[in-house]
Length: 482
Image 1 (cartoon, rainbow, N blue to C red):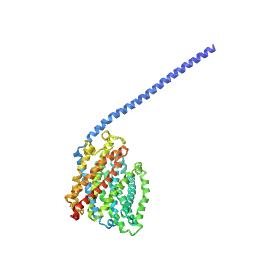
Image 2 (cartoon, helix red, strand yellow):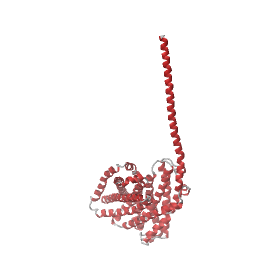
Image 3 (cartoon, one colour):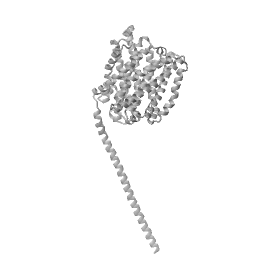
Image 4 (cartoon, helix red, strand yellow):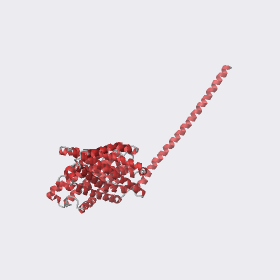
């Protein structure tokens, strides 16, 4: 009996365990089904979002399609305003090229494209950072935010200003075969001081303009860029001429220029410490050096061409036109690069080109003659070159600037040089922006410095070739109209 009772209890125990296991299996199955159901629901939501996304983009993109006339009207006023500012900058350079410091320390001419390019790159970086995100604008309204932005700009301005001076000294030594330490010290002090003051003053002006424009309901992009472009070159060249001339007068005080350089170098850790309090600016200080330094190096080569050409009495009339042709090319290619970048941000993700831009190396026909919106803007910008430069040349003539008469031969060669410069820049912009996007780099921050520096090099080189051709064709008649 006892054995039968024990067997019966074991049998009932197995039955209960089986029921429990079956119950657990059912409950697990229910949990799996519930989890599977939730996952399917999430997938369905994601698929629905993906299906809706193109429709939303298409709906948003249709109003953004611009005609060639609309693009021209939007670009024309800032283009002319910036160009007139560059005409004034050219008049300043044409006037100060006869000062003692420019005649003795000719390497100052090498600094002109480098410092003007540095100013432009810092302005464009600041403008894109301020005018694109409302949260950043609100942060910049506070004094702490203003201090962070200014400190980050001062670090880059000081370092690149010093490197530009070192590059000018090296290039001058290669061409002359020797280096005079007192002149090199004046060059370094002038470059660092100019870069520092220009970055600080123009940065504060930009911040004030953008914040003021936002408060009165005006798009900051339409106001900040022409104001910065019209004032930037003029302020930078005026500062460089005034500071270098003052330091040259006191060149016998051997410790003055090195002391100025030392003070600005000592201040660098302070600016870095302040800038690092903002995470976004700390990231810029880590990754934002390569484009600015490479652009400075390219612009310095253009400065060497300017130095070798302007110091020749036969070509001193080139000074007044250099800021104009370089600035116009840089502004037009910056507009195109920004438009292509906006198109990529809207239609694709970093690292992947959209379907319409699959070619990594587009041919010139694709850049200028396709039906894409970026090709349309490239044609508009290219056709603005001749009327814009004619206005600027006539303005220089009215102001009696330069040492060269505006003959038919000169104007034809000058416009040819400007067309070649802008055509090459627009094509290279199409290539560089695609390459940057494929590498998941923001084209606004990485492509524009390279393109503007290339514009300085091409503009100065083509302009020097233009003057040499005119000199060969006209000889001693070169200076008519002085």
